[in-house]
Length: 350
Image 1 (cartoon, rainbow, N blue to C red):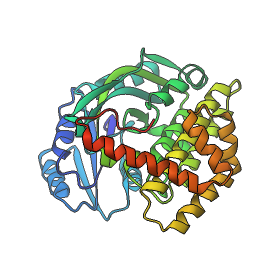
Image 2: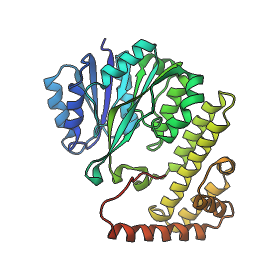
Image 3: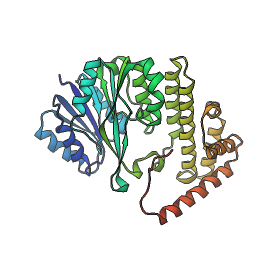
Image 4: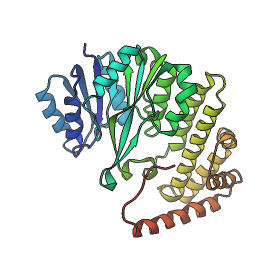
């Protein structure tokens, strides 16, 4: 049995897959199996994977019809035989010592979960790099992680992705933890929250072992998902249940409430500016969100900017026309600024 099962879901990644796979094969720790799940790619990704499979017996390629990244990850999990599991996205890369460093931390501390820091690379800004690192290393129980680190993990977005985590396979099997295949958004955050909730011993490290390449077309800000609000609410329910496991959770609950409201407002902005729906459907969805008691309760606790407080006030009072005007004007201003500016800053929604 290999020590680590590395699972890479792949869809139309021919431009980047070589860099990703080479970074895995160049690891200083070599006892791993590499599971490549080609999710119905329409480009040369599948053929590239087949070439790699012929060169290295540790690689297994599966070609499937397109089912989405969550289904691909679950498929990989079903075929994983390692003691640990590591997910990697096909357009990213890892540092040469990632496996060695994470496995040593897991074995030394008998940990169920190791969470590492990472670097952002902005493809639309000449691969500008942003370091996203925890200030120190830490090993502790579920209670200790919740008390001392949960807020930092959420605020720095280190909790969110599945790919900066070495996971004990036994934990996934015993707790039946998988990716929710119904949603194509926020499923990573839900999965990671379930991991944190189930892990008895978790190690956090400031070592930036993962390189996350991000482009505008691949961010929450630039994609529209019909069931976005349902997906965000599913994550919120999962995170809420996790926080409720512990006493003295008011600060953690506040950060989850704030995240839930901010993500929902981002979706409302998308409805106003990017949705393919007709006007009636847009209005209906916004009014529906404004009636949700769970959302309105979160608004009362959330730490919001003045602009977002205004959106919530308009939403609660069903001033949908004013919400449209607010976001349409801002979108118009952003387009003008973008047309006159060269370069850019952090494209993630705050």
